Length: 252
Ligand code: ADP
Ligand code: MG
Ligand code: MG
Image (tube, rainbow, N blue to C red; front, side, top):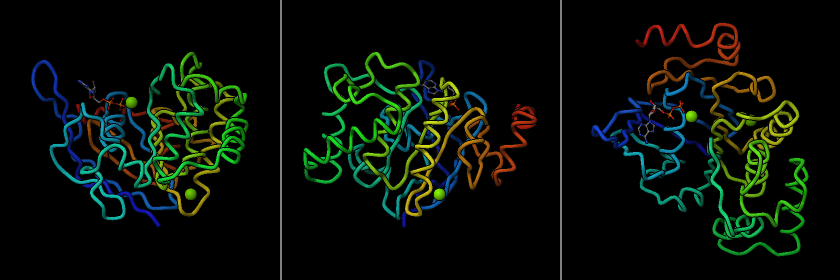
């Protein structure tokens, strides 16, 4: 059973005026079987947390640790992080012109498993994953995310989650730009993953809407690069009713 442990994580980015501190000590632990939601106002450092765990070169870790089952995630290459069992869906999925979804996914799966998946079962698996996300099988021959609508990108991310089968998934604003039907399809996909006892999920979201469909065990409120409060699902309901005002008023 996996545990992702983030301890006192401090992160800065390089700006024209020098380094800017964004994360000021983030601490949270996600265990297999748990769903955690990070919520918070724009600019509070939610995406920075996801990018830092993913190993994006733009973010400099200035303090703290991130471990997966005791292994130092921050010392791993981006590939090693994926092989260790981490999956990250970013707020703005990248387009990869000239690389088909099918090839992209097969390469990723091969890198994860150390051997290529058997072609016949793989094609079936890919088509099945696309179909579950209400995506036409022809998406597998299209370039990754190129010309996909916002909703199609997010649905393709969940198809990818399904196929790559990580231990820990971090989904950054997977709900943004989804209409209600797509939100349901995406939520169903997330719930299939998070229902499994051996999977941990970190769901990052600005809005409470998706939490009507995906029920978190723990909710963390991010404010100004820190966890301002953690609690149960009732915390999301409180945020839905009252917004972030209470927290931002305190932090200014
Ligand atoms: P959130 O996802 O919670 O909306 P972000 O993590 O995207 O917040 O951003 C947190 C803060 O860090 C914001 O003030 C943002 O402007 C700043 N920031 C993030 N990336 C950069 C960057 N590359 N250069 C300068 N500032 C950045
Ligand atoms: Mg669960
Ligand atoms: Mg963000």
